[in-house]
Amino acid sequence: MYQPSEEFSFDPEYPEGLTKVGIPCLTRAQVHAIRVYDFFSGCGGTSAGLQNAGMVPIVALDMDGEALETFRLNFPDAHAIKSDIRTVLTRDLEPYFERQRTVPILFSACAPCQPFSKQNRQKKEADARISLLTELTRFLERFRPELLFVENVPGLQEFSEDEDGPLHDLVTVLDRLGYWHTARVILAQDYGVPQNRRRLVLVASAFGPIDLPEQTHGPGRAPYRTVWDAIGHLPHLEAGESDTSVPNHYACKLSPLNLERIRAVGEGGGRLAWDERLQLDCHRTVKGYSDVYGRMSWGKPSPALTTRCISLSNGRFGHPEQDRAISIREAACIQTFPKDFIFVGTVNGMARQIGNAVPPDLATSIGKALIEHVDKYWSNTDG
Image 1 (spheres, helix red, strand yellow):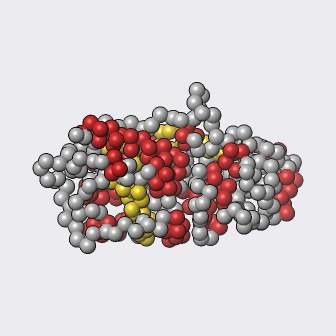
Image 2 (tube, rainbow, N blue to C red):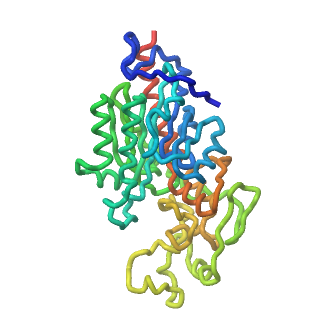
Image 3 (cartoon, rainbow, N blue to C red):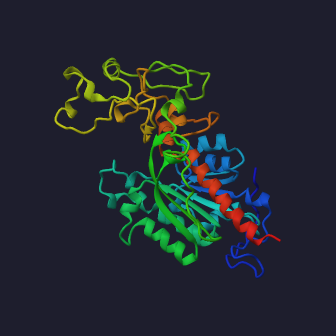
């Protein structure tokens, strides 16, 4: 396990003679061992992807105890800290940094996105979670990471158009500290995730101008990955069953009526295929909510997974042909978690962990681009 320093004397005013970001001549091995500090880590989707790119997870900070248990299981060499970021002082994290920095560090942050989601209909001004991303700026100012990766729903950008929003606060601090940065809304399916998931991604660097990587999938590139690509290999399940040969391959039970409902729906279909007897009273007078009780399509990316992605009644989360909602493992596969990534906690807790996570394959694409970015800097200053 990475051992934190017993003492800490970090000085953001780097000694004379070092590079602009305070790191002496980097070796290629150091460039490819960027240390990751994962704020709002959840179960570790970002860390899994960045680790796959070649980075080293050091610290995870989150207040979700179940998610952190999953993180600890899958990242035994990292430090998982259960705490609300609003109660954490910058000095509390000092022991987890090198006394004299020799390797670049990256801060990642995927603050809870529900306050900025279109599905959240409560008054946003009353949601205390809105300030969480702004809390990150304290740690940026104190520790000056060389790299930053932020991921959230596109609504964060829309909510932050005024001068009081968390994205505006973050960008203001980045500008003041001299970071180069860029942000835009991307499609996760453009980066190999078999899911129609729109996300706002921001990257920042102390090294030089930076951009997001080019998409890897889509027209003229590799074909989009589909639901079949993600879960077509998994064993058959009935509703309420599990298959112990595959970790977390469990599908929730369905009532007799809901079994009738899913059996009345074909691949890619939804509740509009039901006869009158199967309709819900709450849907009789509205035209929306056509995705609920729906099935995914084998040949397309899935809809965006939510924290209730294993519930038939909460979206188009039905298996394309088996009469049930997708299993925990199937949801994890659609989010591109590795097959040996194990989830722990309650069934609903595991679904929440998966739905909240950054898809690891998306984080890998970002991570590889950031390593190339630092490698370019290294090659320009070496020798």
